[in-house]
Image (cartoon, rainbow, N blue to C red; front, side):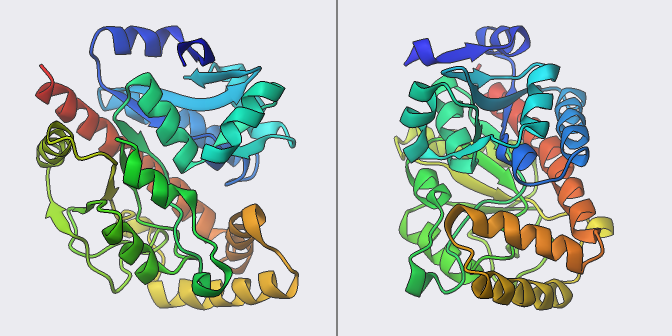
Length: 305
């Protein structure tokens, strides 16, 4: 396993010296946002993590290696290269063996983070059960990964283009704790509300760290969802965004868009329908998640001493 991992000096030093580290994904850079907003966001998020007392480890696959931490030129490659493939659990063997460049999804980043010994991961929103998933069986591998891989995922809930009720039911079945960070309601990515609750509300990084530590010391495998709502100033109105999502879903269906292409299509369409506001909200929530993740990583590291 170790022959497939490489580290930047900053990340290697942090891991060797027991410093808090926060994993970051690359799919959000390659497939989630347009250029140049994607590279600007990636650099700003890394700096936010440093400013909050942790070390960022942006994860991607290049040249047959899982890179735990990326250089500035490598970040630029993920932001501009049109042939970057999305990598989830099933894709690791092929992308590594072929030497292709691969951007890790939530599931892919969780796997790489666990291999590297990183316990906290900041992202935008997790994947989940797609609308009409009871017909299409389109269920994100993020959910099964959360059931088996021991990483806490700080996110603004699940993407609001999904069926949030079924997503939460699936997580419950898999025994994945859904923690509301300073909220009792599960956030819906662009909006702070969804109409659904969380399993537990926790209000400090120390409380979250204590739950993480207890879960894993008990030998209960799998991760946690740390649902952190987008800041109020950047949030979109839930009913408004829902109407745009329904319109985007209809267009996706009419155009025969399926599988890996669904989420990028829907996010791009919602961006168009909101006049670019959804992209601003997306960037704001990722930054907010990065700050909270760094604080949780620091608190968790303190429990390990």
